[in-house]
Image (cartoon, rainbow, N blue to C red):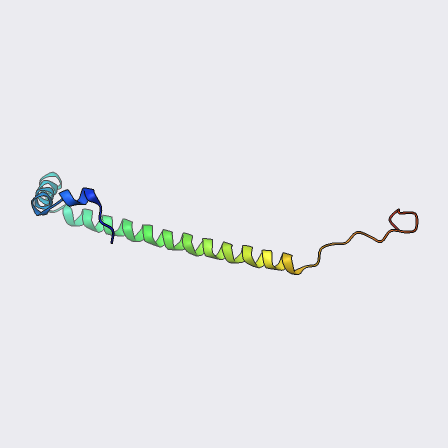
Amino acid sequence: MTFHPILAFIDTPILVGLAVLAVVLFGADQLPKLARSAGQAKKEFLMGQLEADETAAKARAEMEARVQAQSAQPAPSAPPADDKGAPSA
């Protein structure tokens, strides 16, 4: 876990003050609903992030397979030329 200098100023009295302010602003009956909504939003965000990661991994694997298939195929050659240097038909 990284240490952020701004978090050094947040100590127990400040956290208690923020909790009291939240109770005053939202009311004690609304805080569980807000916490539940925040938890559901976080869960939905993480699910979306996981889905995006899976989609990106699948696209990356498909691109690698396509590149490997192209490198395995021989390069197309030009049609053989006749004696006069013109391509034969």
